[in-house]
Image 1: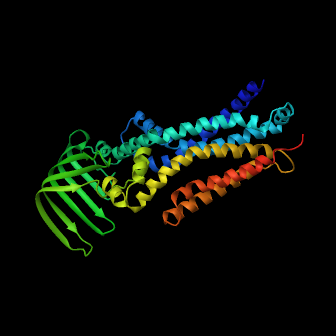
Image 2: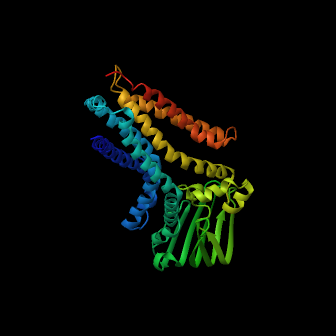
Image 3: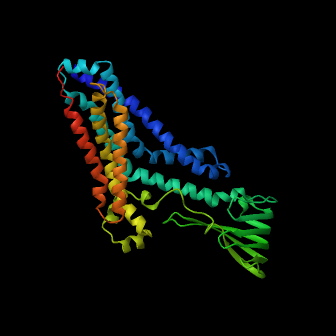
Amino acid sequence: MRLLLQRYLAAQFIMPMVVSTVFFICFLLTFELFRLTELLVTRDISILFTLGLIGNIALTFVPLSLPIAVFFSTIYCLNRLSGDSEYIAMRASGLTKQRILLPFLLVAALLSFSVYHLNQSLIPLSNKNFKRKVNYLTSSGLLAGIKPGQFFTLIPGLTLFATNSTKYGRNLDEVFLHVKQEKKQEEKIIFAKRGELVFERDPNSLTEKLTLTLFDGNIIGQDSKKDIEKILFSKYIFPVTQSQFQDRFSVKETMLSSHELEAVLKMTFQEAKKIYNFNEKEFFNARYEYWNRKNGALIIFIFCFLGFTLGVTGNRGKGKNAGLTGIMCLIIYYALFFSLVSLANKNKIPVQLAVFFPGLILTAIGIRFYRKLDWQS
């Protein structure tokens, strides 16, 4: 009988948790897709490529969405059980609060285990694939937009026109370029008889470089002082993606597996700079990423425990405000979390303290509410 009740409780919890997780992933995905909209609508890409890109992003949002989804799903489930007096009936039948809590903690433990292993290698691999696809859109994917007899304006500050071009614009005839640099207040016009687009990819940094080699032409330029100059050339190499694009969509440390991040913890800044080309901010982010992955699995367990206590107490006594109390707990947690991370970034406190201390505060709050569940029937 008790096993049947525990299965019932787990089933009541899992469905709201799945729905909540999908909702939070879609919510976060919406903001990320806004950033990618320009790249997606201005490139000639397939539906499968787009779906793969969305899948890569969605997978990286799982560790962010699951803790909040588990938290509110637990509150919802226990609120409903308490509101329908099912919780009272289970306690009256002899079930202890520990027995009622057990199915929720087992599901949370399974989710924590899953998130921990996702963070080890699968999510970093998804980040790498995402970066490769974005690099394709911002560099080699541009080639599909170069068509003969049409102006090409997808690159900021650059207008390109060619009377003839091969497939994807790799070989161009009678090339016209207008280059405008807003910061330097300079612009120049380039004419060339022919041009070749050369695409290169660095397998280590995953960066992609697109250069345009022009032959037999001239450059007419105007500097900030409005002086005009003309230069003749037989060969001129123009870097297309060196300064026009910025990598806005992924960071280096999120693409490293947990084993690689663990190795970074043992490195000095100079060693990390040499191996991974980290700057000081990225070196801190790598250490923060390592411990945050550990915390991401642990916090699911803590949120489930706190949600259980709030879900029951929210329907007992005068105040039925479990949702509001839960939101306040989230605000306290994340405000404290990011404040401590900011201090850790300034080397005022250890990274481990910044990451794990807010969870300890939530655990203390959960224990306090949990003790209040020992009411007299």
